Length: 466
Image (cartoon, rainbow, N blue to C red; front, side):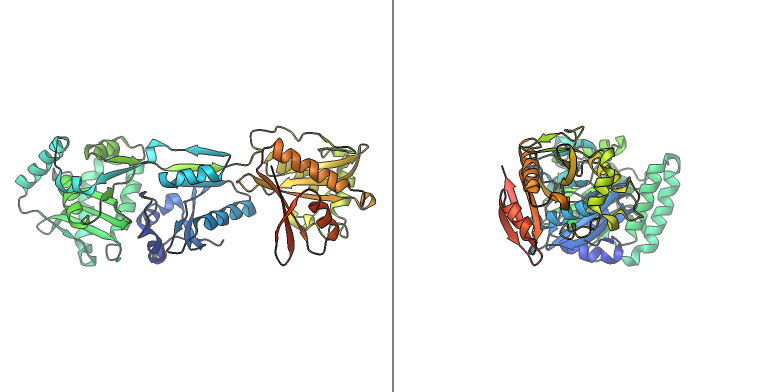
């Protein structure tokens, strides 16, 4: 997958997916991606008819759950994300997963770290509740609203357009003058992002409005509709106009919320003031945002590569004394023409004596692969590797035997032992393998203990399950 940065120019493409998205989370909106792009660093692509967004937060890559278009296939989009993570050797983390998709990922990833932090849950309100402020719970809100109407009886709400840029800019001047004594680093950054968002009032998908006292804006708000909710990205009001905030919340909901059952006022980011304010307006519920870090079965379970015994062989971790024989095996071009991978080119640097040995050590330390040395009477005669852990309970097995020991069934014996270990000790769901069509000996070997599971122009595929 090739990702492109999210910017104003691509917002219309994102909106084609977000416009009908029913995930009910603010992250699934063009506005959130644009407003917080310096924090989220979002990039996007399309896969299997779905929008796939890759974020990088504090150095960690995390993916949004795929957003399908009319003919989108979520499963295939998830497979594309999984392949991307395997190819780039990064952890697979699917973040801000809506509750309706959490069960799907729990089923998909047998080993996963799951989080659902309260801090990032979105506040969802029934639109009719914010339109009316009816009931005892809203008595305090109504008091503020009534005082505002009494003090500024001529104040009114109307939508904003590009023609209001001067009035919007003057609002920011007035707001910053009142805001000066309340500045903090986080608040200043949020204010800058809000100003940039309000510069986009002329975009067709943006819903923006303000409360006016004559020609003066005293409160403003901006949002967008995604599925069955109106997501509010910006809400600001002048402190000197007491009650203008309540006026803006109600009139914005009345104007833009017609026919939309829910209003999402986003999360509180653990800000005490935001939390107090959002709770004051009586949310119907807080929408959960799950995070799934899919892990392979090796992580946290194996401190060292175990020894495995077969009828004739012993399988162990590679040892220092194996380095000369291991290098000879890896660099034997004739023997490795069916291996499917150029180990030397894969280093990305000149080959040194310990290069391949250290790669094997590194891969196990990262729990991305297990390299077994195959031993006959203690002598190193080949290698078998369990790798390509697919996050879904599967891994691939590969084997190569020194040419001096080929043709004796040692590869079959070793591969079957590792497959059984993977299924019954590591607790994988399946072990897979592949071989070139032309490699008849490998086909016979794999067919002896695995079942054929398809083919393409280059490979035959095999699978062994519990």
